[in-house]
Image 1 (spheres, rainbow, N blue to C red):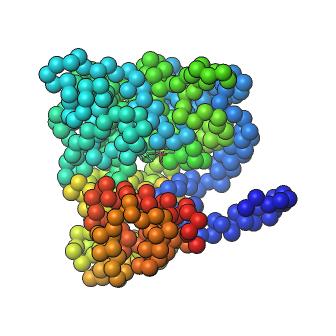
Image 2 (cartoon, protein in one colour):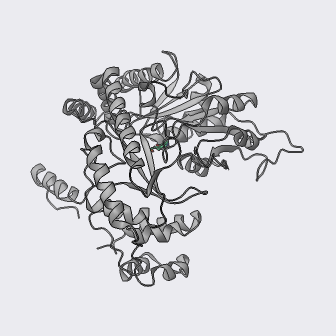
Length: 488
Ligand SMILES: *Cc1c(COP(=O)(O)O)cnc(C)c1O
């Protein structure tokens, strides 16, 4: 509630500290997703102070605040120089991977011309004037979201069932007269696998179609590793690439870059409107008014670490991932999915007696957070870890926790609250309001709004048994209830 009279800063900060008590820890590497701790206090300090320095500057109007143009030029230029571009490579600083991808998809859409009417013009499913995006199933949902928001149709292709890499021939088979964009990941977030970018980009180029490389997670770790597969703008046929600085760039959140091979593509990502009686709008991003804090924070973090700092962090993250994979090979009941090329690892069960959802809960009790990934397209349920620079120091402890947890959960099944599965099965969501859904959850023992956030094995088991559309409907309802006044 809004207080009648203003409160003191100390009071407010104390309240924030209390609120954060239920959060996962953001440092030290025991949370294997969401957070990227450089483990170097002076780097965090540089990012934080630069962020605060630019907090009140508005990136809405680059002519009013030329500092934002200068900073964006520096950040985009630094990223382009590492990712196969040069000083003239056009790019945009965005709030995150989703926004970078949204802009790459918009650029592709606005550069696309529908095929002439005639045989074959209908494409994979839909009218002639709906452009398509060809996506390996491992591509990030941000592309589906962009398609949903921007009126394109996703066309998915399977990946190799063993390596989990996109299959060029399958991509080639999916490219049609309505294809506006082909996507490859470097790497895919779920399994850390880099798609064969040169082959996929060549297929796209051969058909006159743009190719986006999603290097949101890998774009600032792969370049610092020896022998990483080719993936950047130097690969012929790659027309845009996204790289999140708030992931392996270790910058404060709200920082990503999308680069384009041609300036016309960047212009197609822009938006302008002079169609109202107010100030003329010219935006490079989805956001309009925006603080310059994230931009300054990213710039300062890049400068504070430098190439040698990133090389060290990437080597440490990779050493942690290598040690994890080697250690997991010695834990009966666990296996690594696919062939990861980056320090992201997905652990699946190799023993029907070991349930990964139960394992996730057991590991959480020991103070470690691993990210649950539900089964999809023939890929089994698994636990994801994004290893960072600080992970190396804790990897032996993590392996011990994993070995003990696997032994402890062997033979244990998820503890499904009585009637939960049946209740979900027979549930007509359209007939239940948020309060009803909240009551249902608490009736079967699912707590909302408390600390510890992550769903339990029971909830994951239920979700895992559902088709994606049913999972989505439940998740939307869950989020709505989580944010509703009916939540305790
Ligand atoms: C994180 C990620 C995204 C989305 O980025 P946000 O910053 O969370 O919006 C897209 N693609 C990949 C591969 C990612 O890892």
